[in-house]
Image: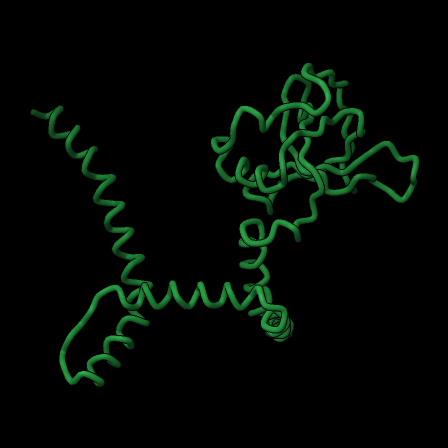
Amino acid sequence: MRQSFLTGLLSLLPLYITGRILLFLFEMVDGPLGARINALIQNVTGTAIHVPGLGLIGTLLIVLGVGWLARIVLFRRVLEMVEELIAQVPLVSSLYSASRQIMLPFTDQSKLPFSQVILAEYPMQGRYTVGLVAKERASDDPEDPRMVVFFPTNHLHLGYPVVLLREDVQRLDMTIEEAIKFFVSCGVVGNDNLLRWQGRAIPAFHHIKTESIA
């Protein structure tokens, strides 16, 4: 009986936690706007009717509407002007900038400062790490054989920029968007082709010598 009770408890507990989280999110989203919509309906109809979920539906419609308007050049310019005004407020600008950077990988990959996905024998020989090319050339010297590679450790905002020789990295058949999913999912999301080498089936890496960026 003890084993059955523990098994049942461990089976029901995730369901309970999931339900509480979903209920909290529903109340948080539906509450503020839903109360106003229901109050408006009650004033118009003269009844005490209350329809749950109207706030959630209204929020979804607002988000879809803003997303549609953001694709229009004129409205996009208005959003840019609002962002410029926000940038003038010291504390608010810092909060907005941090929030913007967190959402950027999911909203507009074209603005990310990375050009390609690579695989390198880093941080030591025998261990291969997926990285993002931040700069194709480490300096202004056209003969510079080095490149700057960013190895994320958490999402895309924390990590290590490392200078590597171009001959010591292998470019992958992986887009920046696929790499983002790969990093965020801790390597779970992907398919058998994501880590395929370009141009050769057998890796032939040199022993990497890295230099820290001053």
